[in-house]
Amino acid sequence: MTSIWNLLFKRQPQRQFVRLDAQGLCQAFKRCEQAPSGSGWVEVGEIRLHWLNRALPANARVSPHARLKRVHSALAA
Image (cartoon, rainbow, N blue to C red; front, side, top):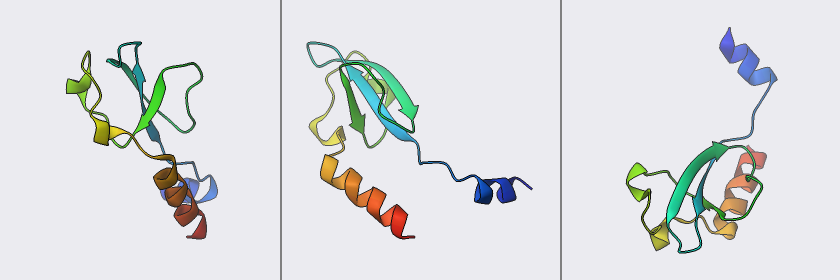
């Protein structure tokens, strides 16, 4: 029965965000459909708990171009 509801009420895919402080250290994680309001939030491809209080790896960030490509492919399906 839940699959019928999923077909009727499609949700946007969840995105992962990390909040960085002024020194670039990871302070918080958030998973939501839209970008969080406020400063310091950056989108990442995945959340890793060992990033807390550490610098975010350079390859963790999602580039805006890659995100747009995912959105367009999802719309085409």
